[in-house]
Length: 161
Image 1 (cartoon, rainbow, N blue to C red):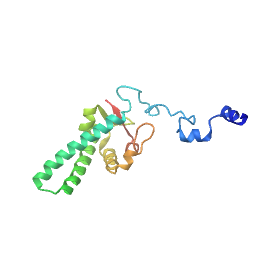
Image 2: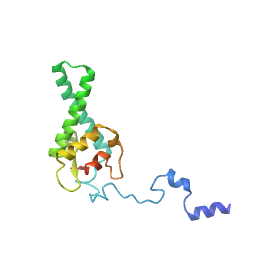
Image 3: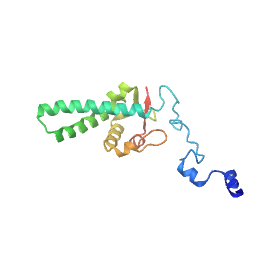
Image 4: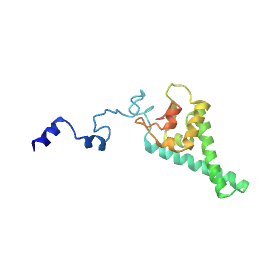
């Protein structure tokens, strides 16, 4: 009996630290964007997952619409239309992010892409970000600032407008 009380006084059991994640182990992770010097709320704060997912679906839907119209005039098959949708999505993500920092879906959701050094995203970083986004997996690996590997590679973050 007394052994159990001594363990509790010394701290959490080792299973409580790794099963509960970093916070239960005492790691202070802070809020998303804090390490980057971004505000907690409002304009310039890190955008939420929900807004990003909605923007992604809107961009994909618009790309599918454009690809469908193009493929119909060219009389392409369904697999060709699917590939064309991916190409249209990649091009619009690259060009729009590089030039104005936002895509149509992001604009409708009130978010945009910024470079952390304050410069415009530009064509080179926009291309790297879009290429990694098309590979899907890099975009699914996030850090505590809600930045995927595609954002980390291009030194960007997605923020509220």
